[in-house]
Image 1: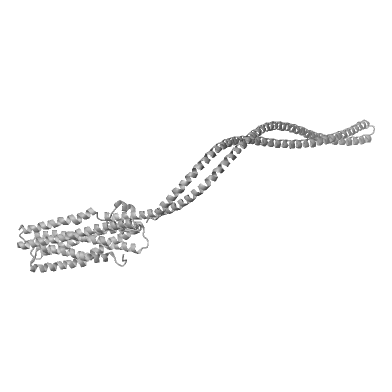
Image 2 (image 1 turned 45 degrees about the vertical axis):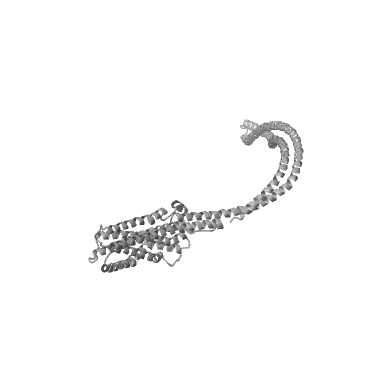
Length: 577
């Protein structure tokens, strides 16, 4: 794919000769049906040449430029970009696939327009004698020649677009879209109708009008019989040549595709070339068949690769299997004797388990007895704690009574102090009264006696108060001693109570532990019983295993032989290509 050449340039180079031949065919049909004289023929040729120059150097270049402008830009962007997305490639592919039909339709109308201009010019020029009927027949033949131009333009444009589409298919398109549409150009049935049916229809129409002229139904042209026969032979020959060309184009398109398919299938089947890729544009169902064949070849290549991988894995595995089977065959006899020894050991273990179960039953009974003793001790300890609480409560009551007694004694001391103060003051007052009585003489004698008695009474009161204070001090000391003793008793009771609570907690833990131990012992006993039963079953199973190992020894020999055969098959699978 030449990056420097644009689509417009390629169309101009590839389409020049086909377009020239199409124009010449149109000119031939016009000249054939209007049958100008030699004088008129000169002007007809000049007019046709002028229209050809305008068509080829003005109309067709403008038409190609307008038609390819957007598509050429997209193709150049795709070629120049290093990476494009699948969506971009699919969109460009669809545009290119639709382009040949667009080019063919534009070509049809271009040549039909140029032919129409030619016929209009011949009708307008007075010295060229042509009737409207002959012009109409010539115009019908020009429609046929324009249709031939449509087919030729579609064909060579498809050949041009094939190069781009094949490259896009290689880079990858939307597979779901391809599988849904299956082709993006004309169907084979459409091609058959366009290339083989319609040309025959036009050929018969042209021959019909030519026979009408020959039979004299038209008086516009006066020709001899020989000239009429020559004209018929000429037009039939031209139509046959055109039909052969179209048939050849249709045949070559199908044959090239079928040959490509046949060669590819032969190369894959006979030579085993699973890396083959056939370029395809997916324009029609035949090209889609090539696309499907490429998919099949790709899947076949993956299958071959996977088969080789599997073959190597099987080869390695079977080799390992063969070695393992030989080792198993060697060790199976040893395992058989080991199993027998294990069976004997299991029997001894089973007896030991039964003995353990009996001892666990004795332990469980002892734990139950201990648990009962712990429960009794726990109850006694609880009673002791309750008694301690009562003693502590009584001691607190006594202590409170002693404290109240001390408070009352303190109050008595306060009263004694007050009385003592009063007695002292009374004694002082009596002494003063005595002095006043002595100073009064005889008149104060009686008063002196009373004052003396009062002083004596005050002295007695002071002495009594001193005795009472001595007793209260002794009582105060005694209450202090009792308070200290009561406090010590309280502390002692509290300590004993704390010790009792700790003992209660320890007894509770011991009781919980004994309960847990009893449960675990019961579980262990149950487990040991189950294990004893299981060991009995194991002994039976081991005897069966011993018998199976003997059978396994025979099977390993068969496995070794089978592994050898699989290894040979894997080697053959690995040689696939």
